[in-house]
Image 1 (cartoon, rainbow, N blue to C red):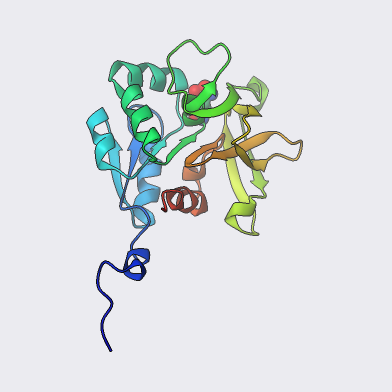
Image 2 (cartoon, rainbow, N blue to C red; image 1 turned 90 degrees about the horizontal axis):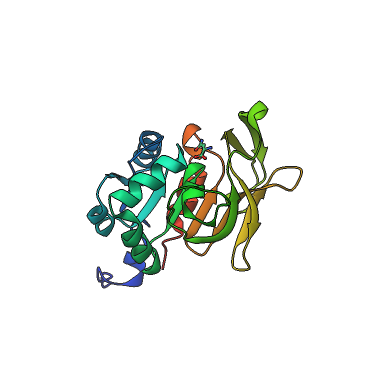
Length: 208
Ligand code: GLN
């Protein structure tokens, strides 16, 4: 019986979906994302310079302070490069402040943002009294068991464009996770739990 050549589609399918995944390491909880990537067997890259965007297959923008992330990303020349890599098809996932950073519309935001995903995001929308809360979400894309989501001064996705799918809502219908092609936004922090399903789902978006 002849062996399959290494270049056959079968052999290709057996490779990991994403070899190297980056996390924007300018500010925020990038270390937790890097640790999660390592746990699921993907090479994590702490991205500090725009040139590094050429060396990765997918990028996560962490939670933190969107004003700081936006200011630093713009100062260091990330925005143009990130827009180019996204146009080339690189998957990008924004968690919390990262979701604000990738949104096209953030009313009243004082600093430059990447403006990648067709949605409106309101900062600190849950109000000061409810700075943090946790909720079990039904996310059909992740399978039947609920996803335990941690919200910390979370933004709200108040409007999504036509090409954007809503992946999860709170009981009152508030949108907290959405996807537009290879762009993913969650207003909560999957990197703060031991449930790696969102990370795996994100990495699968790069699949040809
Ligand atoms: N409220 C923060 C902001 O506007 C986001 C909070 C977070 O990332 N946990 O940047």
